[in-house]
Length: 157
Image 1 (cartoon, rainbow, N blue to C red):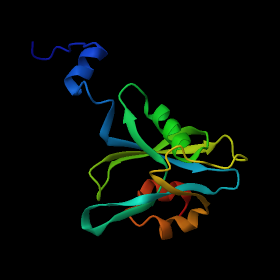
Image 2 (cartoon, rainbow, N blue to C red):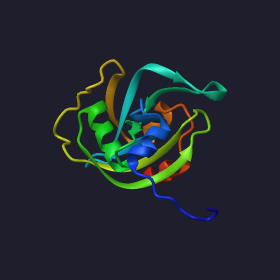
Image 3 (tube, rainbow, N blue to C red):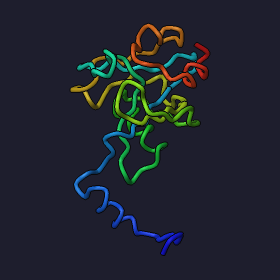
């Protein structure tokens, strides 16, 4: 059967991956969320993450682990809402990369805010300490881990 493609039902694929797992531990979707003023939405973690080479992740773009049954777009929109209370629409994927300091694959999505008048409130208070809109130029001072080059180019920083 060399060279022949075999189609498998989703249920069988999920059993092979791990029937107990509902989401990927290493595939992350992050939202680079813009409001009408051109500000970018960031979250501050309650517990900083330690990475390779002494990297510390305290401030980050909102997002999270992708569930197996959802698309990247669905994931980032769900995670932005859960972490910040803001509904955002994913416009395009900016970049996909293996992070050089953390053992994860990250997809960065450019997102537009849909409810900018509503103050954000996290549904994950055990994880999120603060939600803040910042000017793009402030991002390099807040995000201390390796900033994706394509994200920086998209934000013109």
